[in-house]
Image (cartoon, rainbow over all chains, first blue to last red; front, top):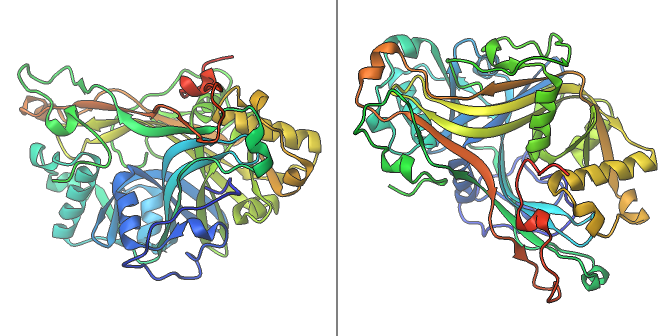
Length: 234
Length: 234
């Protein structure tokens, strides 16, 4: 998050994604991580990314469902989708994923912050044209949203695939940024009689709403009845 | 969301934000709304926006806390913050806010979707230099995160304000996009014995975690103990 001024957390590094000028963190660098496992875990837990591209100096940013498969990230949508068409045509992209973990309520206005885990990914996309990879990408997108769903549903028809554009971005220029833990106030402020702490936040599922045209006796599968992010491991 | 191909919802129009070439929805236009009250309600409920700007064809998009005050949207951060500096210098901005309301699980892969409410805002920012407006903006930012918090905390010092950059964006070129309701499958697919429906999703607060240095007897205020978004009306 770019709102803050305070302290840092970062995961231990192991398999690193090599930093580049675009991904080298300039501010709050101690919050950063190039650990591939950390980047992948954030990408796997979040549901939606925000994808930006620019045309003649004008930026555009839209929310999109995505899926990770190994070191590739897939986007899909209508063949008329402006963002996907720009990416398929080779536009420079910046893709950001943000998980909000909590509000950090400090004693001072200045040290208020947010606990979060985010990933920023730079690169250029490629339209996926191989039919096997296209179907694999659609499968990954469905499974990203609800793991287990792919085996239950009607697969895309040839006509539907013709109307679908799939774009792949390599996950080879990316970094994570993380904050966790309590507020960090100025030492003098700890004496103030002010409640301080963290309000944890999480995207949670409510009770599933069955479509009215589902036949009686067809119950919600486990991945619906006990939906959570990240999805339980298979 | 730019993932979908299916049906639409939109709020009734009343006080409209005039569409411009940038905000005129090209696809799924029936999901769009230029209703000022709809745009404001989404901005007030969401916590974080994604702000994009471009430099020499390279887009950048970062998550940021923001606040709405009337027809202005405020961002703040360190005076060293790259995004804020670009916006203060007049870079074209695109700012997107996305609320995820649910997963739409259809009988076919193709008609899977997401229920959401989003706002896209275009414009150029201005650095706020008037001290009264700067403090009002910081107040709005704190209150956006936790309504009621401002009255409880230590206000920013002069030194802290010197280290803070505040940028204002007008909310006069914006549109909302919304999807709600059940999946909409191809007629033939309704006969398939597949569970379909919506998994509602919501950013929810867990039990507040009091900082270990808060004195005994200082209890969490109501806006912490019963935190919700949107905040209850005052």
